[in-house]
Image (cartoon, rainbow, N blue to C red; front, side, top):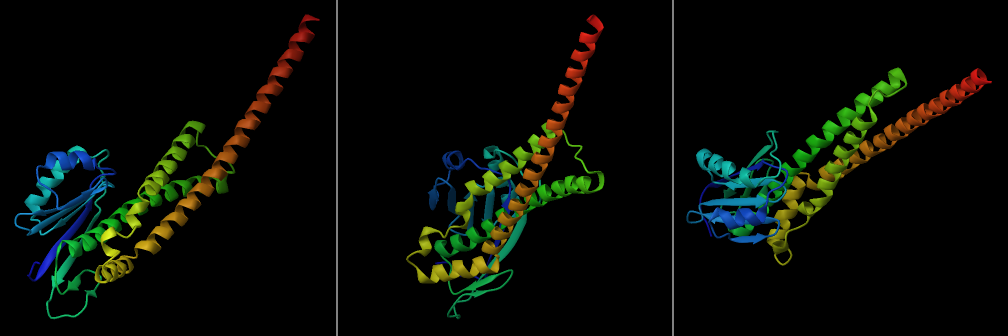
Amino acid sequence: MEKGNFIKIEAIQIAEIFNIKKIRAEFGVEPHSSSPSEIFYTLTNKKRYLYIFDYGVVVFANFTAPKKNEFIDFVKNYASTIVDLELLEEYRIEIDENIAKVIIKNDYVTVPYVDPSVLKIVMLNIAQSVALDYYEALTDDLITSSKKYIQELEHRGKLSISKKNLLKYIGKVLNVKNSIVDNLYILDDPNLVWDNEELHLLNRHLKANFDINPRFKDLDYRLDIVEDNLRLFTDVLNVRESSRLEWIVIILIFLEIMIALLFH
């Protein structure tokens, strides 16, 4: 158990995906706990803590800026795609042994004690919040793009986008959706809350504080809108291609008739 005034938490979306297996093998420190999708470390006599998730988020606890930047440089070597957006969330754990139950506020939580389990629950929820920030930014970009094409349909009655670019756009949408589906487990309750009522309540209240579930539902809803727009664009493109083919057939028939007339 750790006593003190507070622990500073910082969560950062660094990449789209981390190779957790390689990080664990090459970091050179034995983790406190790990799974194929995450690693949790206690460092330097349990004064610093580190939580790494395969969906590209790292959560630091009690890290100085130089130490944090040093680890970011290290972990980027195990990233598939670096995220250029500045997606950072800060939080604080305050320790007050005189309180009987957890007190949760927007930017801090007060607990009667801190141990690795409490830290993991807090750091996990902040990681989930930052990951949702990232997916919200991606879907905002997709919706902005689709709005541009919808406005073009409204004002010009047609789409200027080529079939190739539309297929690229469809691929981008599907890639975002698949990435979210692959990481749906980020919303699952961790195993350590199942048999511990205090941790279960802490986890539930933190999820409510960060609006984890409503934000995911909104994200899913916006992706459905983008998919509906994609179906519309595809139908318009198919009509355009069909019309073009019809004109090609008409022209070929006309040429065949003209050739027949010239030679007879």
